[in-house]
Each structure stands twice: as structure tokens, then as C-alpha cells.
Image 1 (tube, rainbow over the protein chains, first blue to last red):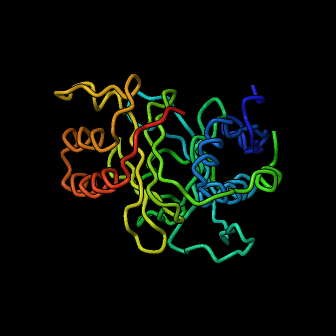
Image 2: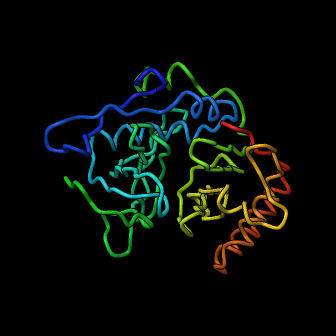
Length: 134
Length: 124
């Protein structure tokens, strides 16, 4: 299964969070698109995704929309944003980094979101159950 | 497979950003980016997430989930799986099916960006 991934991460297993790890990854086609259009900020944000898998603050279970397959949202607080030049700048304190993983382990997207007004450990717009917290 | 650090060192970005729009058949999702700035995402509705510039908060892209679901009942049915339609046309369909004024305002802006960029969707 893992051969379809170009980049792989080791995540907390959402089905057994206290005892197991889960291999997840980004498919070739998605990374090729980022390369083709020279989307540097998106590519460099993989570093933040890696940080989140290594320093997960919470995992939320959710669905994109009603009647769609479940996914898992891993969140964390990378302290810096690294740019192409190698320079690191402090991350925006209003933000939390979220990585969306499909049930099959595919990392679908990774991005910053504002923190929820009602729960500073939850990204705004993510309403699913918190199945694990650090 | 590679670690992130290995992948980044082996695959540096080699040119200036180009606006793009990707249609993912597997996820039934359309993703558009009009600038390469660092961004954050903001969920507007169950179907629509917009991308805003981290430095200016301007809208610079969007993700639309369930595109087939949105477009199947539009008067001039849009089938992005069979026809790489102009992005601005897809945005117009979303605007018509989402009742929220906030979505309408955001999609007015996205429509302007899409028209200026003259993008077609590309399947990923």
C-alpha cells in the first residue's frame, strides 16, 4: 500500500492511539502538481506537517460532509515557518496547523487555520470529535 | 518513499509560481491557487473552503468539495470530469447553489481572480 506515497510520515494510530503508530503519506500526483506549478509555500509547509505528526496536539475524527467517508485531522503548533532560503520565521500565534488524513492513510491536505474562538486547541471549522489529545 | 527533509532537498522548487486549478476525481474536489503566498484556510460551508493570504487576509484560492454534487442540478450541467471547463464557470455554479451571502461575496472575488487568470481545471 505504501508504495503509492512519495513522502511518508509516522503518525499516531487513530484506531489505537496509546499503543500503535500508523504509516501515512502523500501521493505522487499531489506532490507532482505542487512541483509543476512551483507552489513553494505549499511544498515547504510539508515541514509543518512533519512537525505535527511528530508533535501531535490532538486528533479529530470527522467527515468532509454528511454521508462522506471519515477522515482524521491531526493538529499541532509548529513554532516556525521555514522558507525556501532556509530562513525560519515565527509562526502566526493566531494559527494552528492541521493535516487531513483519509482512512486509507492518504494525506489529503495540510494547512494553517485560525484557532477556534471557543477552543484554542481546535482549528476553526473542525467540528468532529476529539479522539485523542496530548 | 522519502522523508520530508530528503524530498525537499531532492526536489527544490525551480521557478516562479503559476496559478493553477486541480480537479481530483478520487476526492471529487477542486482546488485553485491564484498566488503562491503563504496562506491559511477558512471554511465557509460544508462544500467551500477559501484560502487567505497570511500577510494580507486577501482571498487567494479555494477548495470546493463535492463538485459533482454541486453542479449536477445546475441549468447548464457542468461535468468537470469530462470537460475541463473554465474555472469561472464552475465558480458561478457554486455561487448559485450556496445561499450564504458570505459565500456569494467570496465567490464574486474568486470569479474575478479566475477570469483574470483564465485557468482551466487539470485532473490530478
